[in-house]
Length: 156
Image 1 (cartoon, rainbow, N blue to C red):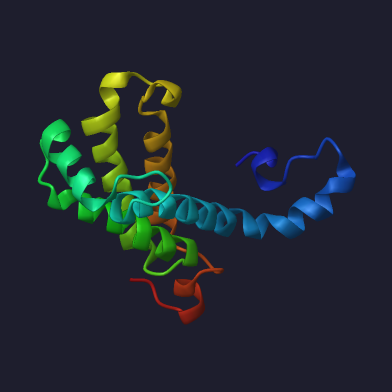
Image 2: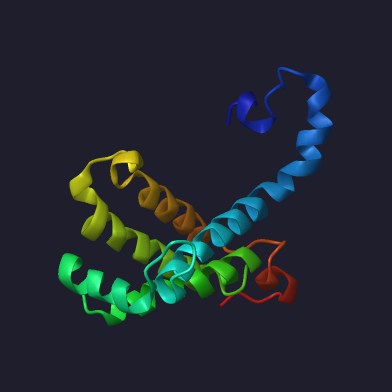
């Protein structure tokens, strides 16, 4: 290994080093909580029609007519986003929940957004792809120390 790999990079503003060192253990839990909590409203749209969503029946019809998927997949997608988002935010059953989110977002990329190009502003796959990658990182890393999984000393 080179010397660079054995020591941290010198910060441009050295006075910030204590702050970044103190807060860096919170980076992953902050990302996990934010990703999980940002999924919850999407699930609420599908399940309950909240936040401008269409509810379960209309979402099921969309899944059937536009995506060629069984209407019951609307319930599955809504539950993964709503309950899975809460579980991911808490770090509860982190790996399996994150795997479900990864799969759901992969389906969203392929079935819904791929034909619209890359950019999210045009309905493209940029946003669900990012979520899929973020979720995949928690499949690989788990919930970490600041998660329910970490606090009970058990991963599912």
